[in-house]
Length: 287
Image (cartoon, rainbow, N blue to C red; front, top):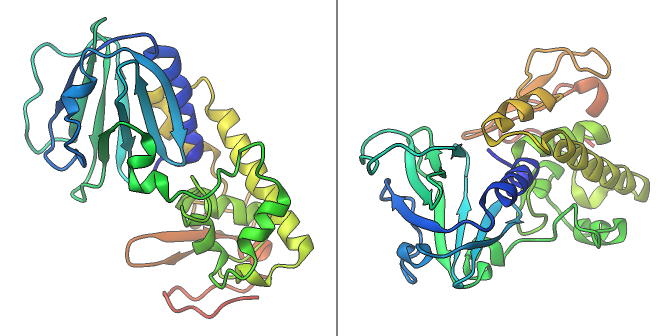
């Protein structure tokens, strides 16, 4: 799933390639992709792009006529920039193409989604805050005003495990499954530790790991072409998706806990005092 660093990089890429150009056509291919109908998707046709912004994992394309084209790439969605779009309209079918945006220059981009769970979402709205997912977002962890005191206040009284708390978009915007694993590894903390149990020193360590991990990922992604961002993300991850490989810090074997629709990866030596976590949903918490 694209998370804060990748969506930030896409925002930079589209700011460079899209701003100032006029949208000629927006062509929905998958029926499931459009989540709003008023204004219609045609409302952005003929408009010139004025800005591209990120809200958590949401990508917002603003226009000079008012409407915004907002997308959430979900778990298996991606944006593909085309220096030259194919001639003729795309054909609806079982392929990954969900929506195409054509520009006055002949350039454009495709939104695609792999797999059978169609969760990629596109909205056309007058204000991005009309999108429910944006309206409920918590603070952005890379915002200038997101200091350690604000982070500590978010975690105070939070009875969930750290893994779940970090992924909750209403608590913190932009962190998903991959970077929550990376942040917890950098902070040397168990994913099952209760958020409310953190000492001031542990809160400081987690805050530094959160900001540092995301900042480094954004810096690695900056300037990378849209089509290479996925491989850039995979190459920069230290524990997520690396089950069975040696930990780059201590050399212990990276372990995994599987759930019904996702999994987490961690290093026992670095994060859980050498104790493997039980690989089941109701694993006991490790303090």
